[in-house]
Image 1: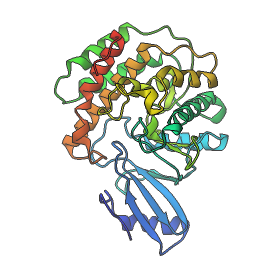
Image 2: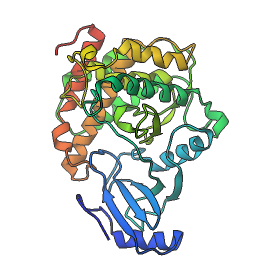
Image 3: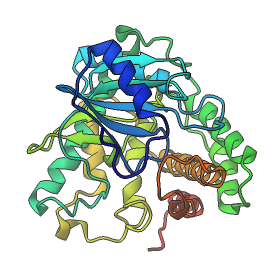
Length: 344
């Protein structure tokens, strides 16, 4: 039995017994916790010839509606049969008695994951194509009609931004974190500057970004979209604005690209990325500063939640303390977006 690196937050023997009962007993068993995730603990799992990924809720108290791995599993089950690039779901276990929390299993998809949006680990001539592939996969996701894949009741349609702003504002106000005036200012500006509702509804991923997809091992093509716990019925421009955040955040702010010489590095401008998405989603309303500011506000509140979990001792990532200060930085970047200027 192999459990290297960060230790599992459950008894691996219990899991091994469950796998033997479900898939048959095998001597070949390995479990490896994946570092970097800040929400649901995630593990690579080998059982015989099966190479899988296990996702579970974190131990300890969690906010109501957070870490909704049952929703993750449901959306994977709906999208995999229609060709959206997601891992094949295998099994959902809702009884917390086995591993301490509910969990699910999905097939492991081989490929490349990039956490730095500047893509320093790939040749310069491939970087633009990877970003275009990211735009293509998002457009393909938004082309799926939720009701056609059994997700018509996956969330409430209409007034998406109004409801989301209220939700994340409540989460911020309920946090025991120290005050962040810039976050308060964003929370006041956003509901006062809602764009008219154009009626667009799609399956919104909720955390669509470079670090949450797997690319083909050699091609600039997304083969798996990961981390669906925040997904719901929503507005497609929420995902687009979220994915465009790296053009508004610096390299030291979760791997952004603000201040880099994009042309020299072979990286696209934001307008080119947005235009590529629009090719696959014709008729979309334009991406506005509001959408980007909302994305930055939302991610700032997510960072607040990471800091809160770190204080409680149940953050999933091992660098939660280091990234918690980014809550204020992202709030500042949101204010810069609505004011039309960045300070690098």
